[in-house]
Image (tube, rainbow, N blue to C red; front, side, top):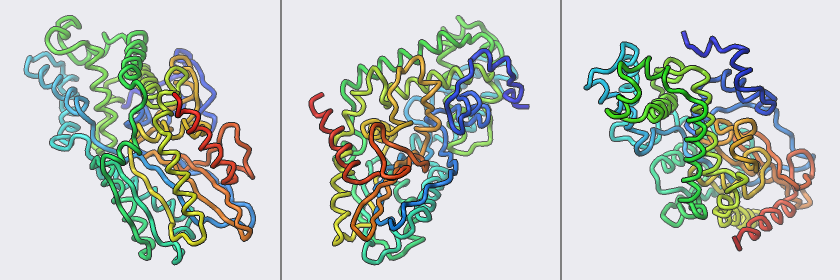
Length: 432
């Protein structure tokens, strides 16, 4: 039985109750509701339907501007191998318990999906982008069925997982509306545009890792895990393989990766207590927020990187708004390091929130919600007979608003107002 099913009110008392989250649930409630969310930024895309706000009378959609993170993928770099390397070494030394041997077998199952496929998109990731594209088509069908506006411009990072995400997304649109014409482009120029490096990135990453390690040191005693998996002491394990917390961290990452490649093992649920899993999530959540989000300490460094990308949204929209334009959509495919600074610079309420990264990020900024695989931003443009332009913005297919900007109605903003807001925000950071 999954040990998470034994999570009780006592556990809630330990970690505290938090009031924010989807449907006003606490972060802990949401993690308990779907333990796959514990994987943080490695959580596969989760579409959560909502009632969408109808456009004001007389306004019809005519153009879409979009950014999508690649879909579910395999682990990257050392995280693709370390967990397997640790467990293989322990097995060769004969220091695994019977439960440890079960974990090793589960680790092997995940590792086999990574052999010669480090960082590559999974089948699940491809389906995610097809499904997102299908819902966008239904959400804004007139955009993709107008014979006078049949052209779609597509930009992508050069990384294969982005290119294959792009291929799946556009193939779905093409299947639904064969009249569409696509232009594709990639290159170093587009990596720099779609996922630009933040300012003082080494300093930011060092601090983010420090915060993650501090949370893990304060909240996790590895003794229970080590005794369950290994037959030697923590000191002996450190000398033979690696520090216990490092081993736990890498095993946890593999547990998150299992959902992305659809391996039917439950590493997190079987080998971690819920409290341990939440602490691992909390630490990785804070690190991700500092590394990519609009945090109080380093948010300016992050959003600075998205200035040219914001201007790309504005300039392409200006061109598409012309009644002579044949443009239906601009589609962009990149990374978590691109979409998070973007929504921070745009000052979108929710994913772009600025807060103290250590004390409140777990309560209010949820990486499984804002930075999962396949995370996406959709700006849908509407026009009426008076040539007035409104924009509705969705983040992960949920309507969002802009901080400090008055809407025309509900989540609909006048394009001149939103345009001025975006350019002002971009210009503000030019001098950073």
